[in-house]
Length: 84
Image (tube, rainbow, N blue to C red):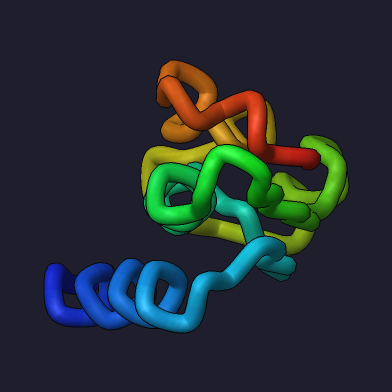
């Protein structure tokens, strides 16, 4: 995702006082992290992706496998807002 898209997502979440985000396609968790960090403390992100084996069987991003789904948000201070 490019920086412009990230800025738009963050601005929408903050300006619209979003409380809940539902994401389809967690992948590495970059957008999940961005969303969780933009939400207020009471907000939540629900993110959905395939289980690792099905991810590996149907997806082919270079240098990425199903065991890494969501890895980017895990070390975020907002990780407690994420339901994967």
